[in-house]
Amino acid sequence: MDYDVFNGDADGICALIQLRLVEPRPDATLVTGVKRDIQLLGRIPDEGVDRVTALDISFDKNRDDVDRLLAAGADLFFCDHHFSGDIPEAETLDALISPAPEVCTSALVDGRLRSAVTEWAVVGCFGDNLDTTADTLIGNLSLSVDRDALKQLGICVNYNAYGSQPADLHFHPADLYRRMQRHASPTALLQDDRDLFETLVVAYETDMSTAQSAPRAVNDNDIAVVSLPDEAWARRVSGVYGNDLANQSPDKAHAVLTDIDGGYLVSVRAPLNNRTGADTVCRQFETGGGRAAAAGINRLPQDQLGRFIDALRAQYA
Image 1 (cartoon, rainbow, N blue to C red):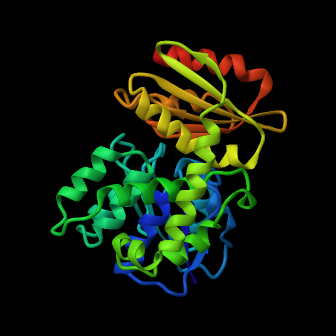
Image 2 (cartoon, one colour):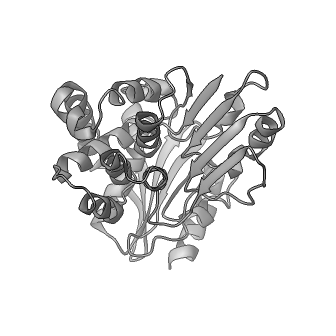
């Protein structure tokens, strides 16, 4: 049996769309979830596994299950742009991993496929707030595209993935992938499935408008920390609102705290003009991880908030 395992955000979805347009596996079992649900290989059984494709999830966080699946005889393609740690050598492991700050999984897949379906990679890049990378890929296209529409699609698909549970989302990522992958390109999707696009845009704009009034617990020259309530809209908007703040103040690091039971869900964005250190800050905490430009903590206990702010300030002051 084949398994397609992917992060539920724009980068993970668009990376898989590219692969399956070029290398169809219609019978593959989809394994995905909310954006922060990254230890997805643990859902795959030990027996009856032939091929596993893992996209946009941390190799380091899935290391034990990688070893387990390789030992069970599975062929594993692992493509990602988060911190990986040491990668074992195995004949049945094909690892394409780069933590470079201007790279995402969709861009890596685009390179592997020799730009076969680059428009989808563009959407993934925009979803990860990698506008420069997206524009570079657009420059390589032979046909003109609606840049603003592709960017809006990437942002909104990315927005849909945030939440503490699938019930927070407008579309389950597996359902969203199935609906998007019917189309040869995002341009075709925008033409033929306007209802999907418009539903996401309206939801995104509504939640972002509500977030604009969120209080700032810290706001100085180097960092800003924004506080959101324990509500579904806040969990949905936490990551994309961090991206928006980073775009507005590119020399400042931002953290968005969303109240959860007994603590906070944390999204960190490094300054756009210094895309480093977000993962360094977040990995200091038990449930933290991510990449240099954007990282997060799944649950920061309330009594560690001061320590977190000190770590953020120490990284960027």
